[in-house]
Image (cartoon, rainbow, N blue to C red; front, side, top):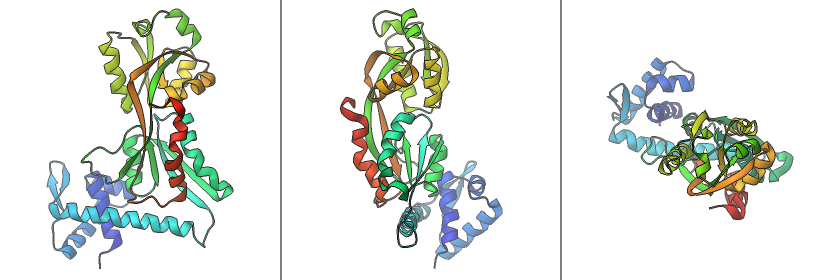
Length: 300
């Protein structure tokens, strides 16, 4: 019978592409992982991983084992959640990863349905970069990842991307910035101070291309991975920024900003990424079923 621990070590190495990184992730020595991988290969009678450059690549047998391992760990996660919701405890736990670039107001709107269980709901939220949170999701330390991008096609991590909603973006700024750089939109952005989302944000490249296409070339005075920090700098009058149109009113009220103009050609999408084949977690189902209400009538 296949040892679950051996399969876990293989899954970690196959996901991150190296024994060293997998060892760091699992808090064990590289030698321990290499030994257990050899045991698994001997047991299956097949080579699962092969050296490729400085990393490791899956053999055809390894790809098959990884597909089954994804299903096994997904079912294991479902079992864990089922026990948590069963007779042993009445508390419902949902572990969520939030990419830094997601506006906190949007995250709150999306997660609010999970709280329908009241005090019986235990919500655990972790913030970080997409790549780091994907590692936690693939290792089943998270049940859900909310991000501005879905899983890339052909990636090492198997999972499912659920589109929660989409929105055009609106340029906003502090009233003083609006007065100093007045005029028709979008020409008023030319040579104006501008606050960009960080390079990890899917919006970054779209916004760069749009500015370039309109020959605006504003002065980029800052780039921010964290949406809340970006809003705080805009509220302090540091420059123009973009926000999801569905949140424009709320963010303007929060940071004391004014709306300048809507960019209809840019659409920001928000995804829920899971590794489960089927969504059984009741809190997660509530989030997916009610996501549309978080975007309202102004969603793209």
